[in-house]
Image (tube, rainbow over all chains, first blue to last red; front, top):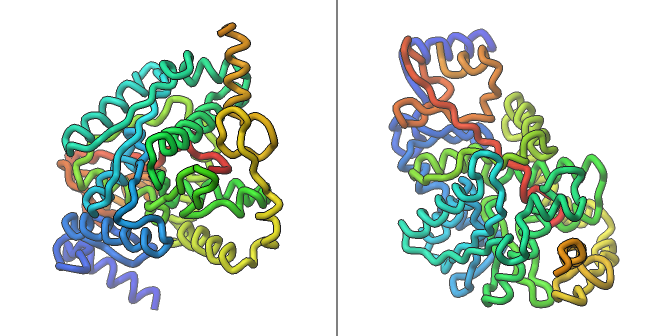
Length: 330
Length: 54
């Protein structure tokens, strides 16, 4: 049997027969082995928004009449998400957070430029928050001053972005906050949290984080697309995005996990998708952990900004900013 | 030689890149000719936003 398959494959290559689009039979541009589906460029550009709409409905992310704030970084995922939501007819505005990261490649300036260019080209509303203007210091300086994150600013960056996204969504009255997390992002986080059996985090991971005490609902409409598929979408759609990775991301744990998962995927197509979807199923069915854990993870409003935090008193962000004020004397 | 052969020869994990030739995406079964210029776009991004919680 293997021999016959081998001969057939060899014949296919010899005769110059390439993979064909399942919908029209033209030469395929994208092959998704996990779905056993190959599509040409035009049909792929139709398929991605169709699937996104399916996921939005399946996980009850938002309705047509709701106002959506899309967190855009200038990268392929967030710009593609914005593009898709607008094409699907949703009311989606953008939020860009300027982090003040240079890294010798003008990283923040370039990602800001590309985001503005995208918004301008499609006549979309973009809100811009500059962390340095807002809080007096850029992300790398905040990280240095507060000694958070073992010499890397990623922890301060994530904390600040979450805080600012929540703040802007709340202050400007958005119902939903949408981020461009793809399946590889989700699988890498899941993998990390599984390695340490972080039950509280595992119970909160999913396509939708419900709204809570004035905070907007958080959704991830791209959570079932592979990162490779989103790259293909951005290329096929002609979206200009920042190719350079954040200079601080080099050597990060999440990238290491993604590389490992891609090795697995190469040998076992569909492994990443199964890993994530099986987790969602197990969580939904209550098989994963005892559900009462969710209630035990009670959140309290921060006494300064009002956002939810796991311990009573100030949230991590406000504690960090207090430290900065102590250093700068402001 | 196919694109897949070339990637394997260069120790590049096929899942981690998208290959383009003359601006068009090509698949792993594409036969490469002498003188073809193939651009590989890395698909992995990360480091930020990739924290345990939300």
